Amino acid sequence: IRDSINAEYMGTSGKFKKFREMKNDYYAVLGINRDASLEEIKKAFRKNALKYHPEKNPTQQQESKKIFESVAEAFEVLSDSKTRAIFDQYGEDGLKHGGTGDFGIAGGYKFSGDPEAVFQRFFGVESPFEQIGDFSAMQGTEHQFFSKEGARDKDPPQCPLEQIVLECSLEELHQGAFKVVPFELQIKDEGGNVVKTETKQLNVQLTKGMTSGTTIMFEKAGKQQAGWINGNVLIKVAEKPHPVYRREKDDLLTTFDITLEQALTGFPCEVSTLDGRKLNIFVNEIVHPKYVKRIEGEGMPTANGSGNGSLLIDFNTTFPKYLTAEQQREIKRVLNAKQ
Image (cartoon, rainbow, N blue to C red; front, side, top):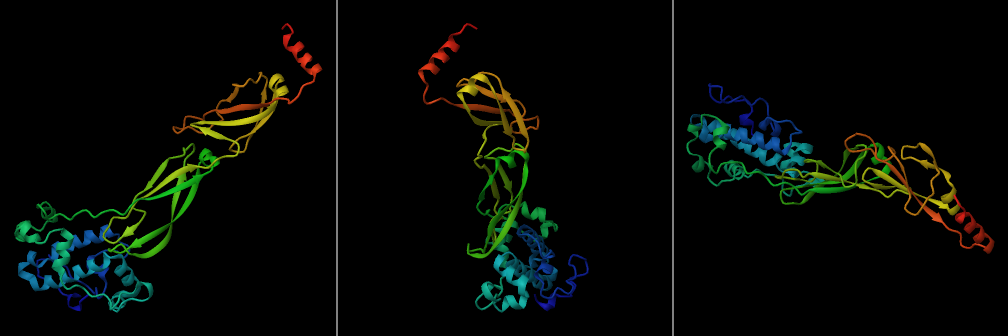
């Protein structure tokens, strides 16, 4: 940034503030922090470009022109992810001498020298003053500026959605869990070229009873490209197959193998729940092919928190492969006996 603007006052009305010891700090020129987002950079440029444009300051054009040019250069550097990354790491000298390594710019960065072109590209019109009219009629308010036809800052496009499938165990969906989801984040320049790839992570809280197919949106946490709004990340919950249970809405289903003797005479069975408890159940009914044992309150938590679904147990009965004649006669005798 040009030293001539470092410490000069512009007028006595207080409209222009003193640029104290900015030296070569583009962030200071725009009045933003070094961790500012692209939206914050645009907002700062909009404010300063309107405030210091020479045509808005007809009695102080020479002074305002210097600052206006510095504001345009700062925006040109910080709104591009590649030049911003070089500036952050090596400062203005490193930027203008080409950077180093993977972040190099052949011949170094050089400001286009045309702040009006930067201004016009930003506001989306070739001749903003013809669209707006006399700056002196604006009474110093950005609101009036943006209410004029054709002079609005066009909304930038948004980077594509990133979709991630998060596989979860049935136990995690039953009890709730905290999951850390890593993903590769690509950062691109204005031309769509990848300048950096980072490993990021998202923190996902699974609530009790969450169902497979549930989606969780992380806004502006995804893909990045200079001049674009950061993309969103969509996490989609996928339930992994369980070795014991099947899920149907809020109910849990499982199958037990039993013998014909057990099906006819009753039997105890032990069930391991998803939260580690043991249920001792005695089945004293005759188990026919459509029989299902229902245990209320031992299923999945309901989404509204009102309780749990049911545990449903069906049975696979194993029949003997062979019966002797005597066994057959005895079975007939028992089944045909008067109750």
